[in-house]
Length: 551
Image (tube, rainbow, N blue to C red):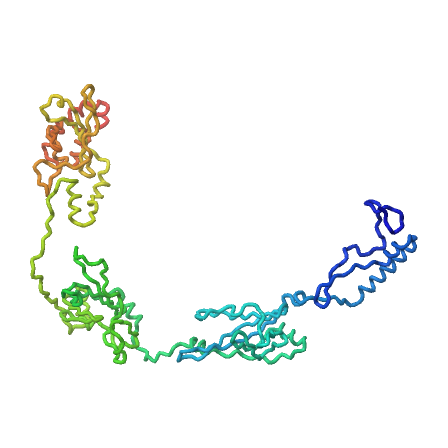
């Protein structure tokens, strides 16, 4: 296959040559905009190309064609461009901004009829769309922000849309049943409209909102200022409390009863607090506050009489008088919040306060009628033998027993101090005569433990014989038992532990030293037996060097 141009070369890769007359090396444009529509464009063939296809040209003719093509290209570039520019390119990021407001009608309100709500109206020249935004106001209670999202707005019922030619300052636009009044615009909007031949009207002021003005002004309080200095009262009478003891007649229940309460009057702010006094195991809920601390009204204006008294939420403007210390007198009844309280006594500070400030008021204790029936006496059941006596007693003291309290000071002082004795069984069985035990007395909690030593060929396994526990003396009362103490552990004495008898035959030297330190609490016989048993061993253990050094 050969080329039809006539130059005689086959149209194969490597046999073609570059056209030196071609100036534009880019790919030709195939699509153009015409009247806003995309239309195909046929590539043009240059003069130099037609010449090359027609005949073989010499080098001088090729240079002449190149110069002609270059001059023609420069003339085309120098002329004005007639290309079409779409709207999304020409008006990209160009926005007209207007400021305005609309009036919202308020229904069913005697205080206001309408509200003025300012808005910002944005017009996008790119696609002739609108966006309406209301600036957010703090604590307005109205959902604010974007009122109308970006979209085109209808101008009339014929289906026409608003255009920037229809916009100006001091005009109304209608959208979704709301009339927006345009009051002003920014500088760019004004310059754009004037460049297009539109005369911009004079800007207007956004009318003030009556509700905002009313809210900004403080509510007038037609109250005559008082000469009373509350700060001085707080500084001089803070933490000073008058305490009265009263009985509350609870007549609302099925069976009429009286409950003891404590009424506290705080002189710092003239507030009153009432607390119930719960007896042990009374079955009452553990919430003693009957009336929280507050000022209690004594007299209310007659205008507020139709106000339901069960609500008890009167404002300070409706109260004529509050309770004062003069109203609290021992021996008289007092009505507080619809409840009757009989004051029968007060504390010592209250009596002294009344003597200094209210000498005409006599605070004599009022004798109440005692209970007619005999007072029930609590009886503790006898010990049943299960567990320790202290644990069983806790079951009788409360429904949920607590661990018995321990002497923490004794535990800290005598922790790790143990008295050890050697003992044997007091028995008639010859097999148990040679068994030896170590009896340990723990001074921190007065418990005893017994450990049996190992003896070869005895057939008895050595080990722990008794856990740490307190041992009662034989013959002691069950309700008030007596426990063994170091004063009872003399050499040769018999210790009965759960029907087993142990005879003490020896002790540590630490036992003698400790008991001699508290000799005033230990019987003489116990110390004498320990000295008789331990001092010979002590003298034999001491060497001459040791005794000389001790001296």
